[in-house]
Length: 124
Image 1 (tube, rainbow, N blue to C red):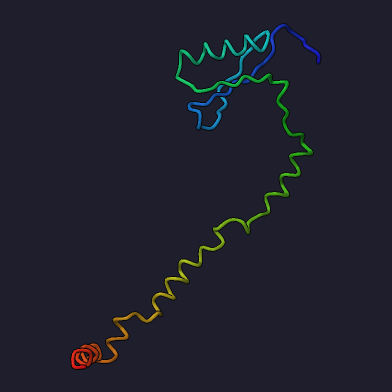
Image 2 (image 1 turned 90 degrees about the horizontal axis):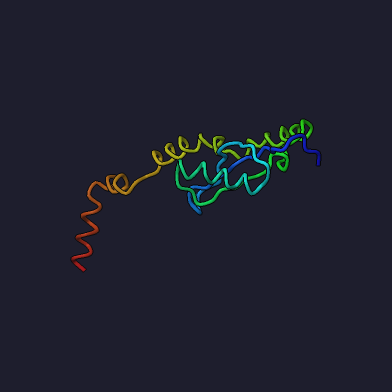
């Protein structure tokens, strides 16, 4: 590892609570890992309470190359996983419900069939 200066760049991440997601906060310059952590803690003590602080050397973070980013384009073609393709189902279900026969409609066909059933049940 080739170091050009006494200071190294660090990236600082934090969590507000033990269950919250980790969030990027800021960058800082420090001569070593221990001082980078102390500097990050000092910065947060003045700002807000946190449950955890992560300090990572920028040189230890790997990002994707241009060639690797090209492979991501292939993954974008997954429209079949999105539910937006099924938007027509709500309309179709509504049509189905309107065509369905409900109990009131069936009973109205008998013109009093409900009373006959009740009378025959009491007379038995």
